[in-house]
Length: 75
Ligand SMILES: [Zn+2]
Image (cartoon, rainbow, N blue to C red; front, top):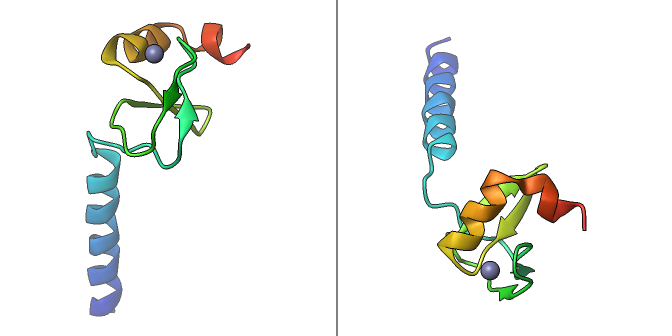
């Protein structure tokens, strides 16, 4: 029983760390949906939209996307 609570607590801590991760990294090469530039994996300029990662070439592109994701996703 003690072991169960220990693993539950550990799981909660891990989940908390992951959900608060401020520097998500792009998992694979992609394309900036705002300007169309290629984006290399590993960039921290990432937004998640509909459970899909979107990488950006610059902070300004990310900000544009975050304001109106639908506009850039529909294309
Ligand atoms: Zn861009």
